[in-house]
Length: 112
Image (cartoon, rainbow, N blue to C red; front, side):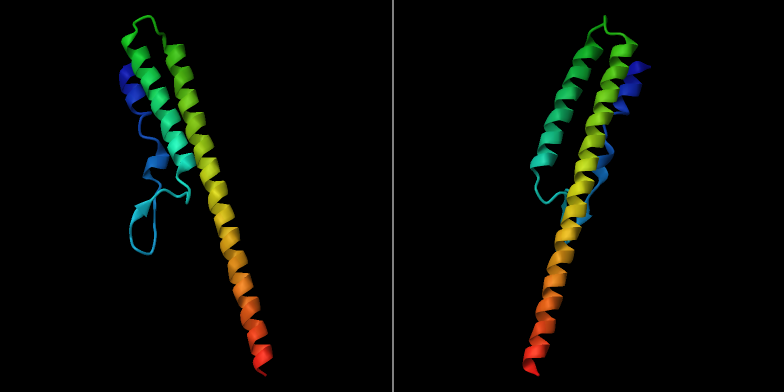
């Protein structure tokens, strides 16, 4: 019963989060893969600890639930960092658009 519960934790929702760029390739939401790689590392370490705990008959349900909580907090932290990075990317894109618009406006005034 407990093993079945644990397996359900192993597919974090971020693994399904992808976006497509102009070429159609799938990539992580973050431009910089370093936070994504760090999260993968943390997640894999926790998975290894869970496997070790599963093989240890002295581990109780409370310890496994504590691990589940750690996995969920790690995933939530990653998703929050991803969302913050996406918002920053959107702001940066808006700033570039504003600069382009200002440049185009100044070009028209100079032409007249």
